Image 1 (cartoon, rainbow, N blue to C red):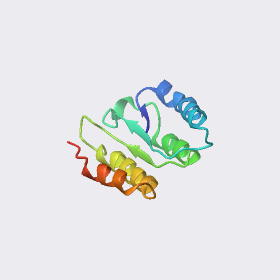
Image 2: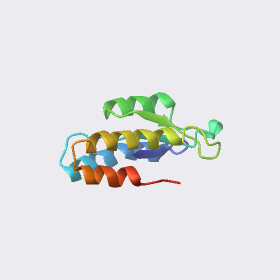
Image 3: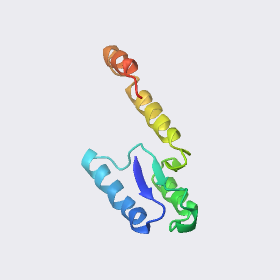
Image 4: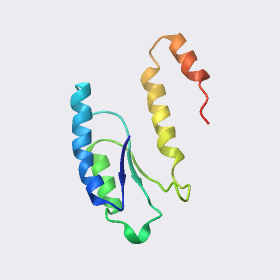
Length: 107
């Protein structure tokens, strides 16, 4: 998950470098994940337009999510996406690992 604060443009500008570093660390050209824009509730202070987030997410082949923890909006879907992606990635692994993961409960 790559996360930036919509009210602080420098956090958005850093995403490309973070993505490059992660790809480099895992030895891949691209990685699964999600781009998440936070602080959607700060409408009057938005420094990064929604369209810029969508465009960057497309360039990285990731879904885009806009969230507001303060208003509890859009917070759960990125985690659901991550869980579904991990489940698909692990589908071919050992059954005992799958059973262990299935038994985990998150609050």
